[in-house]
Image (cartoon, rainbow, N blue to C red; front, side):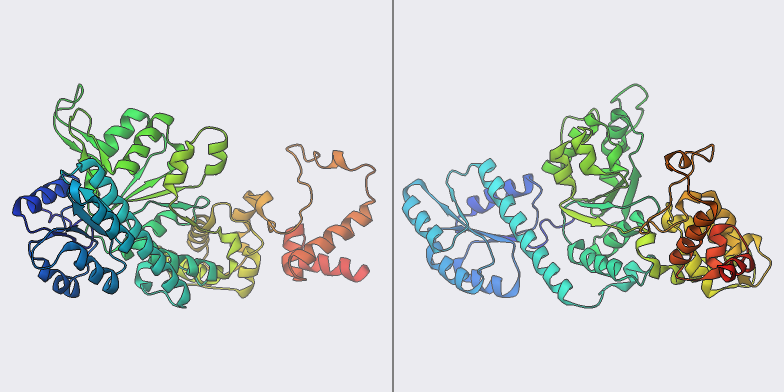
Length: 475
């Protein structure tokens, strides 16, 4: 049986000399999912407790024997100003409560206690403390030059400075509880990044992953929330949803940009209330799962086209991580080639081949629309087909030619592309250039894009290096 996770991370200290008041506060907190509580009936012991234990917030009665709440507040504010203190008072002590607020109390609570108002204010205080901790972690991490948990990010092979700064950001927000949105093109490694975030989160249970693309609202609800026996025809037994499976862990939801409007409403409520209702059930269940979302789609564009709710969009991306495409981190090509060539050789039971240095330059001219996933497929295909002990650009030529329009660097100005009949771009040239001038311009452009590497330029132009050399000599 899973051990109940303590919520919040640090205990709520309740101080009151009346036993029934302590019990009442404890029941109210537990009924709203807050089970990490310390009860204290002696105000003289409070400072000792604070000296030994970090607490999330304090519910402090004003009228107590020994040391009043007002006197105790002064000590707490002086020594522990970061702890929110709620003053608990009767109707005839409102002036004292106001004086306590001026002295540094976070809020005051009137007896008899309005549970809804109390819990709304308590959760606001907890949320504020979480934000302050995350801001402190962010500051600390960005002042540091190193990643503290390199093992968590080991599956993401990189030496790119931009990705390393993303790793540091992930460490800073990892232990929080707010939603995280990971964006990036297909194949950049969004799920690997989610797994790394979960690894540094310190959460007890595993990360559960679900792809929500193509799920209609009923399937979405059943998949995430689960159902009770008899909820609908065919529901012969209880089904635990992915949210319940992710308890005390993380729930990774991929392709969140494909969610239907009806499902968006349910997801928004889940994120706002941190609770859900299994299909067919009457009672809501609370969840402590960390939500991590991913998409390759343009979410702001979906908001503009009314395909995504604006309120959900802002709720999704409390923390936003954008993974740059491979073409923007070409310095990763050597390390990725080393890794994938070794992995492919092991799979095909071959000696590990080496790659020519010019292979990196050659691949750097390709845009990689499929990113790291596409590079891996290319390498496995090349290693599987070759019988040589050297991997050359020739081994990749066929795969790259299939993506012809992606051959050129996206940052370089490219020539107009031909249409299916090979003449679409020609129709825009009036008058037509002389053949000799066009040839010279093409050669000059190919050399510019390959940084005067004649072998690479010849490959782009579809001629041999010898033929290019002869043309340059004639010029």
